[in-house]
Image (tube, rainbow, N blue to C red; front, side, top):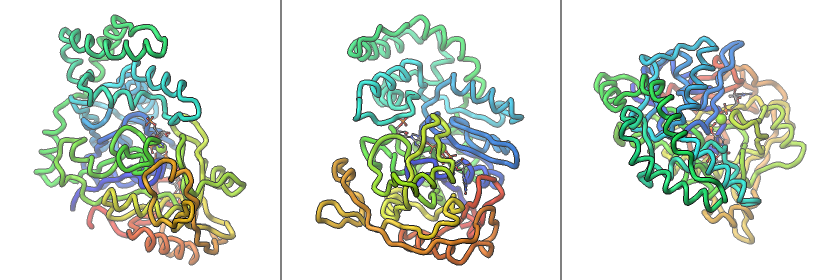
Length: 429
Ligand code: GDP
Ligand code: IMO
Ligand code: MG
C-alpha cells in the first residue's frame, strides 16, 4: 500500500476536492504541499456542502491533515475558514490540523500588491485570484518572508519587517501608494500569532514517523498542471509548481513520496482567468457546459470559460507530471449531447502540432483539430458502477484513455461523494 498524490491535470477545478474527500477515508493523513487559499475545493456529502481553500480536504472526514511548508499561508484567511468549517460541525483541533513551522505567510501587503499589479495591467492582466499568492512566493524566494515560526519570536520581528517593508515600500511608491503601515502590520501579526501557533509543528517529523510506520499519505494538489509556473501556459499561471514532484519539497518528505499520481481530469475543459484556451467555446455549447456543470469559481465567483476536451493538453500534463492514472470527473455534464468533440492536435499557421508549443503568441493562435463522436442519450449522472454507464459513454472514456496514454482509475458522476466508480484502487496499485 503506497501513497497517493491527487493533482489537477488541466487548469484547476477538475474536482480534486471531491476525489480527495472520497479517498481520505482510506488514508492516514492528508497533506497540502503547494498553493494557498487561491484553491477552492468543493465537497458534497449528502445535503452538506463544504468549500475549502486552505484546509486539506481530509479535515472533513476527521483524517489528520497537514499544511506543508510549500503552501503560502494567510493567517486571517485560515482563521475565517476554520471558523466557517467549525460552524458546519467539522472538528478542527491541533490533533487533526498540523501546519509546517516553515510556511511563509501571506500578509495584507501581498494582497495589495497582487491587486495593484492586476489593476495596472489592463488587457494583459493574468486574472489572478487577488489573494496575494504570487507576491508571497516572490518574498519567499527573495528571502524576505515572515514565516509561521517567526510568530513565536515576535520580539525579533523588527529586522525582518525592516527588510520586507523596505522592499514593499519601493514597489508601492511605484504605484503611487503610501508606505506599509508597519506598526499596524506588527500589531496584526501579534494578534493572530497564538491562533496559528496552536497548529504549528515540525510536520516533517510527523510525516517521517508516518512513513516509518507504513502509514498511507494522501497528497492534495491545488490548481492544475497547466497552471504550473514551469509547465503551464506561462505567464498565465500560478506562482507554484503544481506537479506531483512538488510533494517532496513542499512537505519535507523527499522525492519518493508521491506514490500513485492520480491526475484529476474533467470530461471537458474549463479555465478561469486569462490566457490561451484552444478548445474554448464561446457559443451555446460552451454556455450549456457552463450551466450544466455549474462552472462558477468557488473562490472568486467568476464564470469559468468552457470548451471541449483537449486530449493534447492532458497527454502533455500526464507526461510532464508523471501521472500514473486518472480520475475522470463530470462526465454527467455531457449527458444528452448529440455529438461530442475531442481535440487531438493543433494548427498554428500551416504547421500541425501534437503538443502545445511554449510561446504565448503561438498558444493564442493554436486552432484545435477535432475528432467527433456520437454522444449518449442515457444518463451517467449518479452512476456507481461501470455497468451503469451507457455504451457510448464508455466509448468516450476509452478513447480518452487511448489519446492521453493513461488508464482511468476512477470515474465521478455527480458532485456527491458516493457517486464515484472505482475502476482500480490507487492505494493498492
Ligand atoms: P477542485 O478545485 O478541483 O477541487 O474543483 P472545484 O470544487 O473547484 O470544482 C469542481 C466542481 O464540480 C465542484 O462544484 C464539485 O462539487 C463538482 N463536481 C465534482 N465532481 C463532479 C461530477 O462528477 N459531476 C458533477 N456534475 N459535478 C462534479
Ligand atoms: P483549484 O485548486 C482554477 C488561476 C487564477 C489565475 C491564475 C493565477 O480550485 O483548482 P493566482 O491567484 O494563483 O496568482 O492566479 O491561476 N487559479 C486557479 N484556477 N482553480 C484554482 O485552484 C486556481 N488557483 C489559481 O484564476 O488565472
Ligand atoms: Mg477549485
